[in-house]
Length: 291
Image (cartoon, rainbow, N blue to C red; front, side):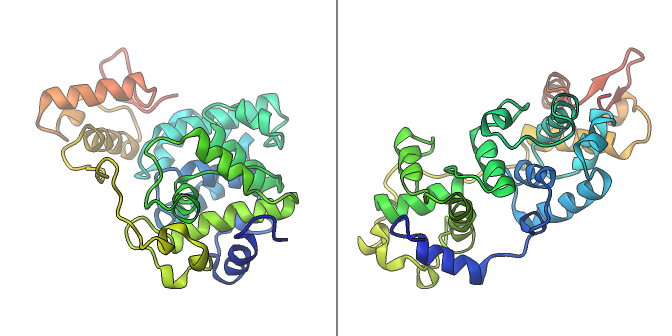
């Protein structure tokens, strides 16, 4: 089982410490895995869990979602953030239903052809839903490998070819073990090798970690700034969408104007929602969710 210097220790750690998440269950459908992966982008598990459960109860298959307007996906997305992901999931559901007989494709290249599915999501779904052998490189995995192999605290801001090559070189040969490795090293980054407070005493590969062995040298790259939200266009967009989600019918413009005093920023945010396909301006001057 030990195809790389870390796999035995990391896989053993995962067996004991993995979170019990519904999309990891043995009977989780490929669709449920795809939904979880898109929801988990830039959103913590604690916020995704209730949203994922509600989504899967309403739309247990791609066909169930595909027959609804895309605006219902936006409404159901609620406050998960980055709501264009809801439109991507709806577009995926339509493509899967119309082009793949309602079944999430298992082929990696075909997964990549789905609307809004990039290299990470395709590799994750192929690995976690179908037990295939792929390098699954998310933020957590990049951080673990940067510390363990490269000896630096944080990976580069933008993913590099070197990171991809390193991740690929560490993928175990046996597909079933490779898929387990992919989720295990991701979980290690989420629970132990965290960005701000790594728990090195709990890490199964601490004795092999180049960063720890070097004395945990501080990050010497560009400053890492946390994302702000208050007062940003993202906040304004969220408030505008909240009005439309809560309304059973299209709303007049003054209902949107009431949520933000600064008119230039409010109009810019509304224009952005319209251009992103998240809001439909109607001929009578009212606004609605798409579809």
